[in-house]
Image (cartoon, rainbow, N blue to C red):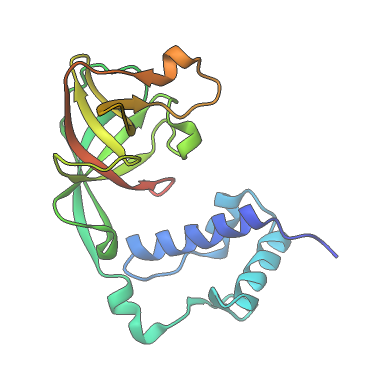
Length: 205
């Protein structure tokens, strides 16, 4: 019996849902799934059948692919357009000009308040699942809780980091196990929170 890789299975499910979100509920073709996953037809077929068995999708094995809970599909796939404002450094703070690259439709349920998207640069938040080129959905706010990933403006510019409070003072942490202690920790003299990260979007733009 061939083993199903759980990570690949989740990745396939995410791809199918992301595709539907951005294509008015339409499903991707098997050929598109094969290309995205780097799988043969037989392997993609096995994974689709497993998603069907797990109740994640509806797949007959004869080319018909759909999602569960069709009666709620209109609500499920309602989307809103969110502006993409350039890049944000995932590394040492530096100034990065923000400009509107356009808009991306995202699920309405993801959006909490006034939101925007920033494209990540660098690898300092790799262990938090944020990598070069990823889009980060950010809610505009000047307040953040200890432990949240924030867009922060410091004396060195803007950056994306994990916010911690130590001895009553804010500290910004990178999350990359290959970094030295000096690289991972920023003790800003000045700090202004510009937003809190809500979601990381990969491979759909």
